[in-house]
Amino acid sequence: MITHLSSSQINIYLLCGKKYQFQYIDKLPRTFKSSSLAFGSVLHSALSWYHEEKLKANGNGQTIPIDKLWKIFDADWYSQTVEADIRYKDNEQEIKLVTLGKEMLEMYVQHPQGKVKGAEIPFTVPLYDPSTRKSLGIGLEGFFDLIEEEDTIVEFKTSAQTMNAGDVDNHLQLTAYSYAYEQLYGRIPKTLKIINFVKTKKPKLNVFETQRTPENHKIFLKLAKDVLEAICHESFLPRPGFMCKDCEYKALCPAWNR
Ligand code: SF4
Image (cartoon, rainbow, N blue to C red; front, side, top):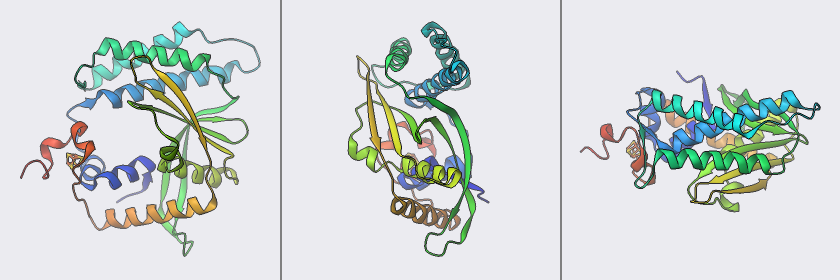
């Protein structure tokens, strides 16, 4: 019985129905965690802490020392390594990854930032059929990484290569979050921002901005409805592709174990 969907669940379903089943229906434990997933999660936690501190310091002129932020990063990284077996890519080393993360945090702190309105804000909003306006009976759940003044949603993404403007304009999560924001605050966000941290030898930080329209929201709702129907019909087909190399369920997957 599904009570909610998140944009990442919809995304995983669209990329591979079998992986969605293993992860969200069967709830199978992961045998390992990819270094990319662990790294993204640690960077998010450190940034969340930083923005919470900024929010507390608003107006009193206090700055947040970078070494304190690095300590948070170290502590989160340590807990990831205790909780899961981290699988590194070829030529990847833990020490280098940790150094890279700290360099990224320093770049971000020095980068111009908007005024923080809230960080790591959870939400649940209703989903409905855009043609009949009838409720789908489930909610859309998620977390805004950061909300800045002037109706700006900011999401942090780490990637091996620089994202491009096309990726950002078609980014499913941004459309879902724009829809959620409208449901919560009664207006479409003025700006959807992606801060893209690129894991090159010398890390890069790129900022992309985009927007969504009511039409984009309708297309998203139609997609959510179709995915929900397919899940309810237990349509969980494997879809071998680029995700398989990092897939925690490959040993169980019928596409690889005929
Ligand atoms: S190994 Fe590939 S096809 Fe199989 S579940 Fe994972 S992502 Fe899907």
